[in-house]
Image (tube, rainbow over all chains, first blue to last red; front, side, top):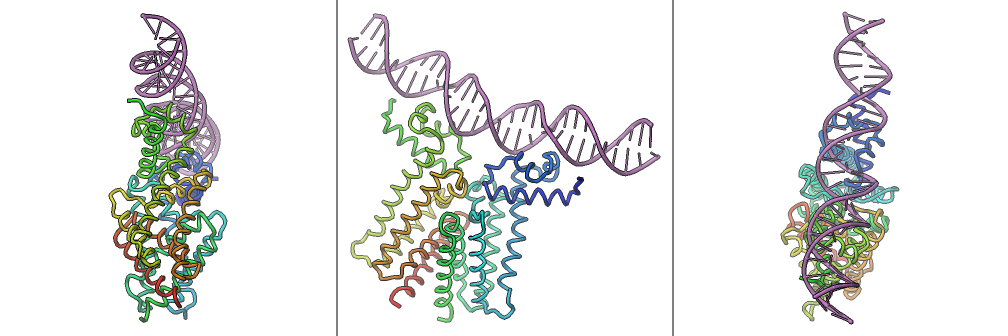
Amino acid sequence: MVLSDLQARERVLDAASRLFYERGVQAVGMDALRDEAGVSLKRIYALYPSKEALVEAALIARERHVLDELRGRADGDGGASPQQQILALFDLLEEWFVAPGYRGCAYLNAFGELGESAPRVAGVVRRHKRSWRDLLAERVAAAGGPPGLADQLALLINGAMTTAALGDPRAAAAAARAAAETLLRHAIAD
Amino acid sequence: MVLSDLQARERVLDAASRLFYERGVQAVGMDALRDEAGVSLKRIYALYPSKEALVEAALIARERHVLDELRGRADGDGGASPQQQILALFDLLEEWFVAPGYRGCAYLNAFGELGESAPRVAGVVRRHKRSWRDLLAERVAAAGGPPGLADQLALLINGAMTTAALGDPRAAAAAARAAAETLLRHAIAD
DNA sequence: AGCAGCGGAGAACGATCGTTCTTTCATTCC
DNA sequence: GGAATGAAAGAACGATCGTTCTCCGCTGCT
C-alpha cells in the first residue's frame, strides 16, 4: 500500500501520540514507532527532523482534538448556564479518567519527563494549559466570577488528572467536581 | 577517603535524589550518578541491586524528609487551629515552589515517567500521596470538616505542584491557598 | 523495453544504556 | 615484611538508543 504524505503523517502522529502516552517518551524507541505506525524510519525522518520534533507535533495534534472535545462539551446544551458549562467539563474529566489506559495528562507527563531540556515541548505544554485556563476564564467571566476562580478550577483539574492516574479515578473526579461546585457557589455572587 | 557503607548509602541516595529530580529518571545514567555521588559503580551495585531499586530507595529517603517537614510545619505553633494548620501547609508549598530548581512533585514526575512499568516505584508514589491525604484528613477531622474535604485539598495541592513547575509559582501557590480557604470556610460548620 | 526516481525493509553507525569484570592500589592482619 | 581483603577506576559487555545509509523492487515516463 502506498501512502500519501498526509496519510503517512496522520499514521505517524497517531502512533506517536498513543505510544508516548502509554509508555512515556523516552521508553518508546523509533523502531517501536515505525512498527506501530507502519511507516518506515526513512519516511518518518523525512516528515519530522527528529524525535523531539515528533513529540512536539504529536502533542500539538492531540491538542486540537482535546480542545474540540472541551469546547463541544462546554457548549453542549445551548441553554446551559456558565456554571453548568464548567461542571460539564468536570463530567467529561470523569469519562477520561475511567477510560481504559488512562495515565494522566499527556502534557504534564511529557513535561515532567523532559522538562526544559526539550524547550519546544515545554512550550506546547504551557500553551495547552493556557488554553484550558482561558476556556475556564471565559465561563467564569460569563458567570460573573472573580478572575482568579479560573486558576483555582484549573488547579483542581490538573490535580484530579494526576491523582486519577494513580488511584481511584471515580473518586478523583467526584472530589474535583464537588470542590468545583463549592468554589462556584461561594466565589460567585458574594 | 574511605566511606562506611552508611556514608556511601547516604551519598548515593543524596545524589540519586537530586539528579533524578533535576533531570528525570531515564535521563540520568549510572555513570553520572557515580560521578555525582563519588561512589564507584561496584559499590553502588553492592548497595542496591538495580537502578530501579535505587530509584525506589531515593524516593523513600526523600519521603522521610518531606513528611517531617510537613508535620513540623503543620504542628508549628502549638496553638494553631486545624484550619490554620492546613493553611500553613499551603504556605510551605509556596516556599517549595519558589525555591530555585523546583520542577514539580518528584513522586508525580517519577510516576508519570515510569508508570506501572516500575511497580515498586509506583507503590512508593501511591504510599506518599496517601500520607499526604492522611495528614490532611487528620486536620480536617479535627476541624469538624467532612471526610471528602481532605481529598479536595489534596487535589488542589497536586494541581498546584504541577502548575507551579511550568508557570508562575507564586500565582499557583496563591490560587491554591485561596481555593483552600474557600473550601475550608464553606465546607466546615455548615 | 529501458531508464530514472521514489519508497520499503532492514542493516549499520556511533553513542550511550544498565550491569559486570579486570586491574590496581591501599590497608590490615599475622 | 608478606599475604589477604576490599574498594576504586575504568574497561568491557551486550543491548538499545536516535539517526543515516544501502540495497532492492516498484512505478511512471519516453
